Image (cartoon, helix red, strand yellow):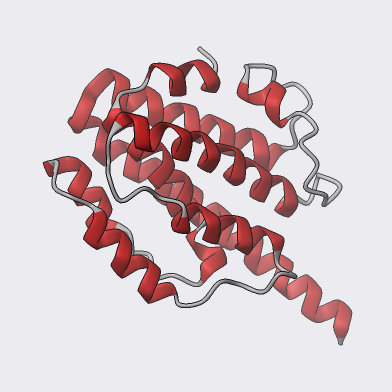
Length: 189
């Protein structure tokens, strides 16, 4: 099943987990602590309100990144646009927007891509045609699908495994960001 179909069929918890996982994987771009979003994950597990956790995460990350860092700006918009009310109607457009933003971020950072934010292949990839996607983008797409499948198949019990998928993706993105920063520093020296 394609990512677009999975998002269309997901329930409130699956949608919230999908958007949160995208944001969690992109957290290294915002300089956030790895545990920053844990209260939101816990809120998904016990069905508690997550508005307070969102407010704390936004406050902890401070101001919006500079306009020069498009990838960080996309990540910040994911956090800023998260709905305080966690209903299917509120989180469905957010989860979809987070999916697109996360794929764009991965395209911007993928060394095999041309470094532009063009949507080349992203819409097709979300619809199931992954043939022309750069490796980092294809891996992010697989993670997004896995998270939604885990929640659809296991409900709240799938949250732990979804978080593990997110943590793995965050490590990958952190390594990419680190390599990119080293390359920029070396070329500027």
